[in-house]
Length: 235
Image 1 (cartoon, rainbow, N blue to C red):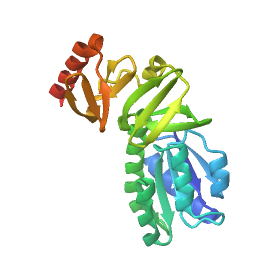
Image 2 (cartoon, rainbow, N blue to C red; image 1 turned 30 degrees about the vertical axis):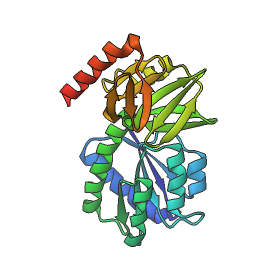
Image 3 (cartoon, rainbow, N blue to C red; image 1 turned 90 degrees about the vertical axis):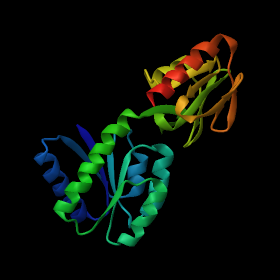
Image 4 (cartoon, rainbow, N blue to C red; image 1 turned 180 degrees about the horizontal axis):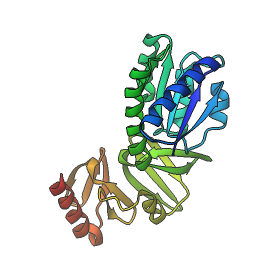
């Protein structure tokens, strides 16, 4: 079952959107749970990570939808976001917050069906590609494929990601377990777990990842180089 959230201060617009969602899901035999919010503040204060798709009005009463989306992305960088607006020109800013698409009011059911299918497809792949971490006292969602490498420092694991740098009080072993059996990752030493898609090159005992130089330890060298060769062969 997919969890869909609608953020819109207009009741008639929420009702219309629900009818469109039900039209698509019933045609495809899908079950969804729909949660409605009348304001961005209410939505953000009650945000749940089980959310798959968010339909958000840009012109909200309490705050601008773009600003609300920026705050959402600080919490969850992976949830599928679709803007709903009466003014299509405002939706251009949606790319700044990684919005998948935008829908212009009044909603055309057939046009909506195509956008809904796209959102559902992204939601499936997005859920599989993200992990939750506890960083700076907050629960944050980050995408696995954007992680460049993990680094252990004392009792903490640092996630070096394209989305930023996040620190979690967790062992490297447990952090690796979160990523699952991912063939793109390999250890170059006891302190680093590298996403091989971000390796820029290897020079003697140094692995260059996203511009950072990581030491390859002697015990790990043969295994790491073999894993990287297999990765390149697979590519």
